[in-house]
Length: 393
Image (cartoon, rainbow, N blue to C red):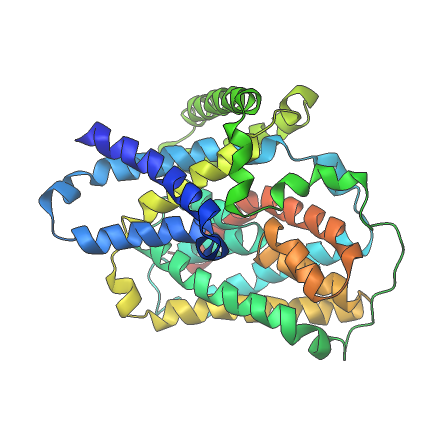
């Protein structure tokens, strides 16, 4: 039964992808959200079933293995040099965005230390999510051995609050912040050109993005990337095993991230096709297994303090970044695209740029989001342990 369950968890995301490719309404919902939602539904249906409870171990193992293997796969194809070359106001504004998330998360931790259990874990995972993305939050959860219930609750609230943030940025944000920030001035240097190939493969969040894995040549290269990822994970576990037990989980994730980024500088590794899509497929497996471990009571019984803390980070970091950008003379569009790069993720950059009616900020937006994704694990883990030390948790 354990083997059958493991195979089911590995194959169900493929079924979701195929259905989303055929049904546009499902595709609009997004395969990541669908995987997580299906996991929650399975948890609700099977609650109390003894056979289901007996599979808790395999669900935990699959979630941990899938996120570990996904991390290197997601960074192998990143052109770090191209990302870092997007200098000037974009990277300056992105640095401000990351700093704002760190400051507001720390302030929020002090506000909610008496009302939220393990607030240091929440602070660390929040920083990972809002400087990089969902995979960063998942990696940090593993690194700091965060409470499973807190993690799944945060994912649920994050989906709702991030959607509200996105709607605001695409509608009211530009008219509001244009009153305090200068207008964008075209430089003509970031318009669409061939360099977009360095980032474009990360921008498609539709189910069709996974079609590339159906080709034999690409699939073979993706498997080669998977084997390299497994080797990186294995080496990371061995190296982290040399450290004190209390630090092993954090060092494992940091080492996996570092070795994955280092491997991306090797042309033969960076040119492997399909590695990013395979990494995202493993993220779907992670979302499905994590969702299936959810206590559905978190949906019906809203944790107002946790919901408010996450909302505080989103609103507070946006306002703090705007204030600093005002003094740094950064324009409205650059401010909004870098805030979105930190809070959201790469696939949303073209959508937000379209709403802002500015195609020139797409490429630097990609670069900013990628830098945030690379730094997310480091910043989140550092925030978690720093907050725990400051609060004496």
